[in-house]
Amino acid sequence: MTKIVTRFAPSPTGYLHIGGARTALFNWLFARRHGGTFLLRIEDTDRERSTEDAVQKIFQGLTWLGLDWDGEPVMQFARMNRHAEVAHKLLAEGKAYHCYCSPEELEEMRNTAKAAGKPMRYDGRWRDRDAKDAPAGVKPVVRFKAPQTGSTVIKDHVQGDVTFQNEQLDDLIILRSDGTPTYNLSVVVDDHDMGVTHIIRGDDHLTNAARQTQLYLAAGFAVPDFAHIPLIHGPDGAKLSKRHGALGTEAYADMGYLPAAMRNYLLRLGWSHGDDEIISTQQALEWFDLDHVGRSPARFDFAKLNNVNGHYIRHSSDDELLQAVLPFIAKKLGRDANQAEQAQIKAILPAVKERAKDLNEITEALQFLFVARPVQADVAAQKHLDDAAKARLKTMIETLGTVSSWTATDTEAAIRSLSEAQQVKLGQLAQPLRAALTGRTVSPPIFDVLAVLGREETLARLGDAAG
RNA sequence: GACCCCAUCGUCUAGAGGCCUAGGACGUCACCCUUUCACGGUGAAGACACGGGUUCGAAUCCCGUUGGGGUCGCCA
Image (cartoon, rainbow, N blue to C red; front, side):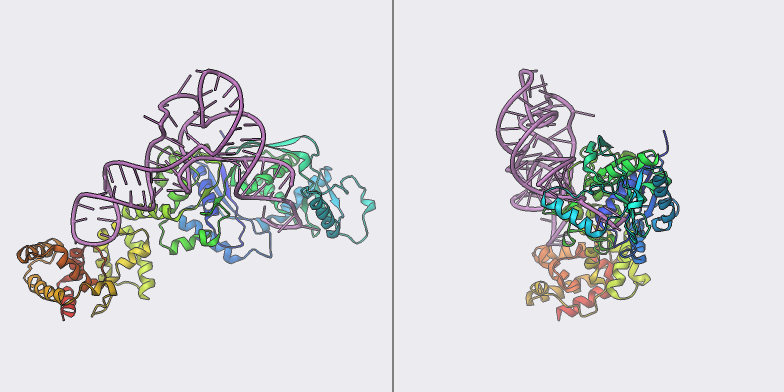
């Protein structure tokens, strides 16, 4: 069996969006799974819209997702001459021809076709015309002489056999009038030259696959295997819009999603392995195949992504998670967390990670560590700080003052026996403590809060609140 | 409009003729756990788009209808 080579070939006209990320993931998984090669090609032939910034965004996005590519990325524009060379070869072999149609003529053809309810098809008017008839001063384009009868069938690993009648496909332009190659030609030549064996891409390219197949055949290139995966849709079933998740990967990073969670979610969107839901990348690397990619488009669902992300957060080690949240903390504080603060964060992380779905929620849950005294209680928390509560706080300050070792277990034991002695429910003591210490009604387990805050800070905050 | 693709709970999906009175997960609801919020546990509601065939038997095969999506550039 030949070595498998896949590629991801985005055009650098914006960020790496979520659909592209999934396409890249599938290509990466398939290549890595079979000990093959995963290549990256930047399709920057549209000089108007391609930007260096977008190229960097794509690199960053893939890197964030943990998808490493082999070798240097191929920049398509730089290979223009090779693409043209193939076009000229086709021309010399009579498999392509010069077409002198003006844009106006084409426009007319388009309108006629539209009026007749037919798809736009170039009518082949220069297909067999002699170059002598060429109008003076018109720079011709080069068109591919596509087969006019018979059919082209694409053997697709996801879609099955898809047949196109050749009469539906017209003679596409492979070289523009300025001599530059067009997309379909460039893709075919690059994929061939790069030795790509499996083309895994969005199914919006299915029709292109037919035209490209004809080109492969004409050029004498081996036709690669295809796998056209369904596009990702928005919650409403329509095209994924920005407000529905069609964002760049960096937006997901900012929202606090973990790359591993993203990989798992994206993998599961359109691919399955029985009833398995949580699939580590390690496991995916053993299981991934094209046969189990679904054929119907999947809708992007933040609720499920959140759930998966929550799972990965809970199962992250404290060290990993600390590294992941530090940037978020820094952004919030406007400075890096110092050593002491990092130690505090790490200490409370085991309690915090159980209750967060993303890194921003973790940051939010950690806010009590960074507030200045006196702690401002929010509206809900103030309800737990009425006069009766303040009285209880005073008692608790006394009780806590006698605790010899300042641990969550010991402070809890002290407060519990106080609640028994005073015959008040634990909640009657815990909620005021929470409100006084964090200014919120929701926080990590309160005795863990006491422990990380330390005796001095705890007592000081309680004193502030007790008035 | 033409061509191509798709069609199982609200969502992601399992299902490749009998194992299906259709399974799992997310979400929703209820209960349990509980110092808050989560986590965890238990349970509930919830789907084979419709109509014809084929077959002893169809979610699974065929045809049609309906619905959805994609493509129809000297963009990629």
